Image (cartoon, rainbow, N blue to C red; front, side):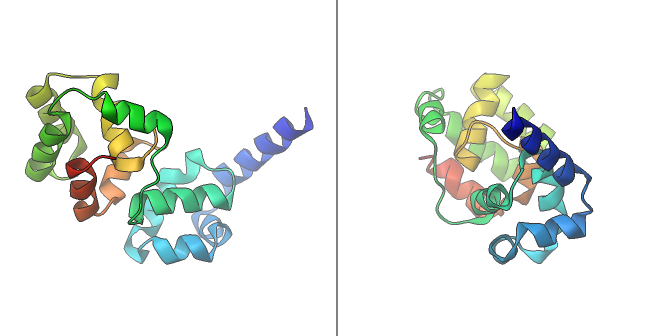
Length: 155
């Protein structure tokens, strides 16, 4: 099918582009949202998950924006998270910040959950989605006050 072929070649182009080319291609709306200091990490983080500039913009808004659009699937994951999960996640974040392995180990210890039961609610609360770029990389990009806000009041 022609659409599948085009998407394949678009994916290849995004994966092979130089970071500076990719940054230009993402466009001004992305540039306006991503802090200059986070530019290279943002590109490396979202590159495997984007095909078009609009997808880069969506990730820029999810990682750096004030208003998080939460998908229905993510709302369900948040609503069915174990009791106290987000309080434990916030406590672990206050202790370890974006140090991913330490953070996850602490959440496991505090909440008694692991695997998908740990990662899905965390991803859903932080990004509003149940899929996307590597969680550790995204966590390092999201401003700390925003992480605290999202864990303190998951939607």
